[in-house]
Image 1 (cartoon, one colour):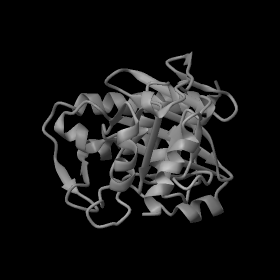
Image 2 (spheres, helix red, strand yellow):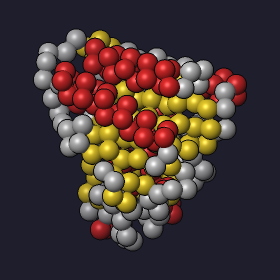
Image 3 (cartoon, one colour):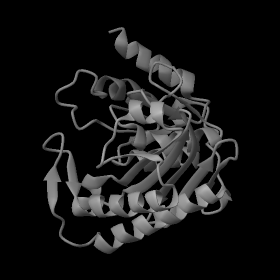
Length: 265
């Protein structure tokens, strides 16, 4: 394990402990992009802890984060290393006491994700990966599932906060997939959905209209665990992608075909 991955793991754990300490308190909630897109004081406290740690250890490196934002194109153009941070993925769940949320950090170099960490404080599970070095959970190597047919697949998805105002709101894709699989889960944390694909607990996950920090660490985890990642058109996933499909590999082509069918209606 590299020193950078070790730093990211420790920082994610510290942020997760902070979030746990605040979890059962009454939260001050404010709204961001819509009246269902929320942020709490816990998001901001976790972000402050993580950003302070990165700036102290890696001064001068660019940081893009859920609450602090940042210009992705400028950062990736001007800086060789860029951190992508979501200090609390699943804020609605967190604020309501629904126990599905996590913390994620990823590092990109020259436009490629080279390290990623996802931490689930409620289960004390920390997932980590480095490019070319495999994927791990609590020190144990993880792999994607070997499910080869949709009818035996447990998959996950999510719906964007702006789903009421955009045509590509995932309803058509959801309707296309649902009849063919064992089950669909919508738990509300993209980072944990991706970690669970990497660990073989889910066979696939797709979503639209998220941000790079939602997907960065998880996309690396899935690939390093033996899976496949693309956008919903089958193109390689990149920072600029506005959709993502992550699978165990066996189901990738079949799901892409189902998604293509929704665009032909």
